Every structure is written in C-alpha cells, then in structure tokens.
Amino acid sequence: MLSSGIYDYIDVMNKAADATWLRDTAISNNIANGDTPGYKRQDVDFEGVFQRELGKMKYVSLDEKMSDINEGHMTHLDAQIYTDAENYSYRLDKNNVDPEQEYAELASTRIKYNALIDSMTREFQRIKSVIK
Image 1 (cartoon, rainbow, N blue to C red):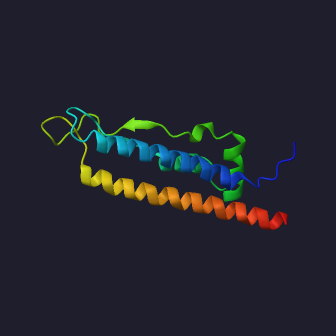
Image 2: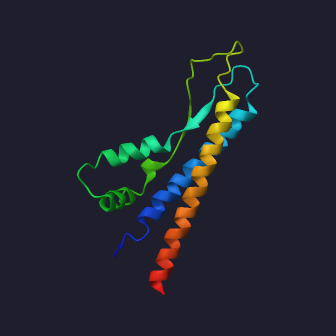
Image 3: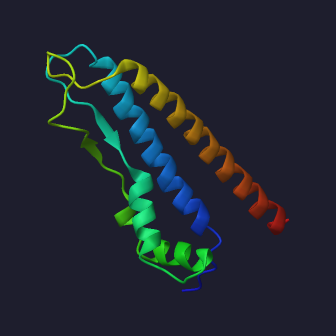
C-alpha cells in the first residue's frame, strides 16, 4: 500500500482534539460535583502521553515521529480519565474540587480545543490547495 503521510499531522491533531473534548467533559463533571461530599476530581493527561511517545524516538525528525506514531494506529494515544490526588482533600467533606481552578482549566481546555480545530482546518485547506 502506498502511504504518503499527508494526514499524519491531522491524525495526531484529531487524537489531541478528542482528548481535549474528553478533558472538557471531565472538568465539567468536576464543576457539577463541586458540592458532592467525597467526590474526587478527574482529569485527562494527553500531553504527558504524547510527550512520552515522542521521547521514545530520540534523534528522529518530527515527520518520522508522526509517521511512526500513525503506523502504530495511534491506539497508545487514546486519552483516559484518571482520578487526580485521590487521597488528598483540603475540605472537611473529603471533596478535592477547587471551583476557581476548574473554571480556569475549563477555559484553557476550550482554547486548546478551538486552536486544534483551527489547525486541522488550515491543514485541510493546504491539502485542498495542493490538489487544485
């Protein structure tokens, strides 16, 4: 099969957008459960997973890294929700959600999501202009 690698960056950005959407959902859930006794905040760490994957391929160009990541079908880039600071709570009801922090994280996550969507749109426009 002939592979041009034309969609390698788009595929990785798509995985990042999926993870960002999942993080938005987790943060929204944290905000909704801010008053639930015993609730522990949840988060998603796509950036850490992605950095580990890139770090495994030292002394390789970014294009080669993207190609290698995509050849592995990117199943290792699937983001997962985890419980953050499970044994830590600064409140008497054992809830560890800080609403101000969650709103700041939510705003940051939405900015990242919009930037990823814009980047994918621009990449598709570049591909379309080359095809014309």
